[in-house]
Amino acid sequence: MANIASQKKRIQRSERERRENRFRISQVRTWFRRLEQAVATGDAAAAESEYRQLLSKIDKAVKSGALHRNAGARRKSRAARIRARLGN
Image (cartoon, rainbow, N blue to C red; front, side):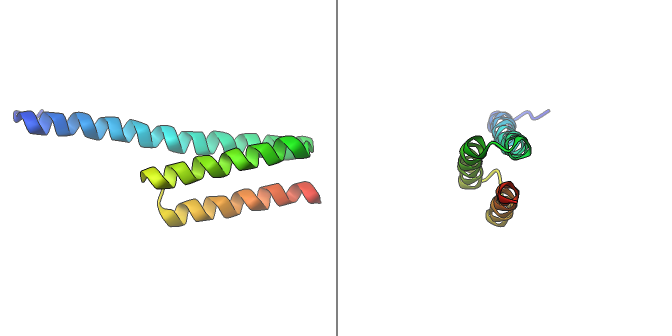
């Protein structure tokens, strides 16, 4: 455990930022599952809604730094492929 006050504050801040990052990444995973479920049921309207929400969550995660820019692009591409399965 740190003895210096500024280091104690830094530890608290790091933990808070870690929780926020985990929350954002968890949201992205949740919306991926929701998109896959909507595509599996064949509900085009729900799939489109879930897809838009997923892109928003990915963009927010990238903007906040929880996801790397390239990782965000890769996940958006994956989401587009999942959505495209609905057309088949």
